[in-house]
Image 1: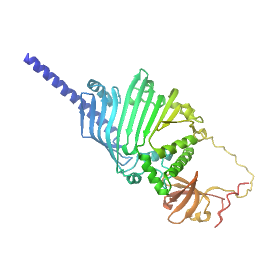
Image 2: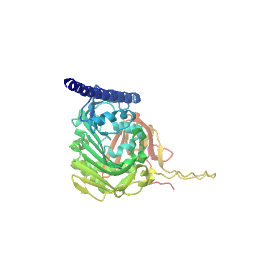
Image 3: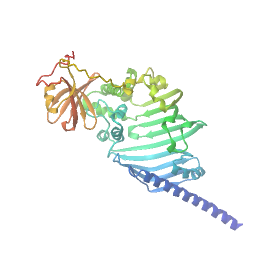
Image 4: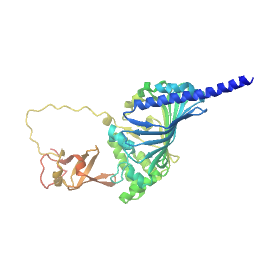
Length: 438
């Protein structure tokens, strides 16, 4: 009897140790495969791996350095949640091939991000263009067009901290729910709940086709946690205006910037931007679709009110916001084909007419108070009235709504300058803008 009991205990201990060794081995293989597949883009290290009988696999002290960002992220640990320990044992080996069967949640309790290197929005601008930054850009804040490290440090933020959770739950045989929670602590918290038809999700991640995804519903909640107040104090302090005036000017500037990228909004949306920036608190946006929305049908959204199309409802501090209008301009995203004009043999003599023409920096002194466009070497563009120029700086004034923004540009950072003028430069004379082409 004692021998049987001893053998049974030995078998249980051996099974437990064996299962732990199995988990450690496959986890090591998975991480090494990720490191090898991404060694040209990311440096990845970790200290150790653990698992518990609740079905949680933990990778401890992970350090990730994306080369493109030139900065390091420090993860206390990364937790993979399975339903139970047996599910972890049965499904862990599938992760190596990108199969996430049985995985319910990916959790990152704490990540430290020192204020060094390149921010994510800078990388996005480099890879995909500055237009992607405009919806969440910084406006009416002097020379600042994004929240950089200097602004964060002035607000008392010396290092960013965040926690992340992504959960997947099967609601029915054909419907999956995803819950994303990103807590940036000093910068606020974002929660996104979405429901998708299961048909669009393959067994393996490598087989995912974004065009096949079908969205059933979506809700987004953002709590700014005092971040907007600190940001408004900083920006209004630069211009010497009140927080109310700053919020209004920023909302107007944002609306103009969105118009430039083909997104048309009405005064209700502008007022929502102003109120949230001024009041802070919580903003919730719900999407109640009349039917599943397939991602590859985005072109059908042009020139219609997206608020009505997606059944959007916004709540600012639990107060409903109604009557909004957001439209994607078809002319912007689908510009007409250029008209090819056949050359005319006869010579037509026309009076000088004005247009934006490339102009040298030295000739700018002849166009004070004239209209000017400037493209910088970093891709940024400015347009306004030329106010002053010398060998050290170029000053441009831009009218935005009821406010005026002054830009001071460095000549050595300028790539192209265009001035609204005739083809010939008339020294020391600025032509009257009222002279049109005849």
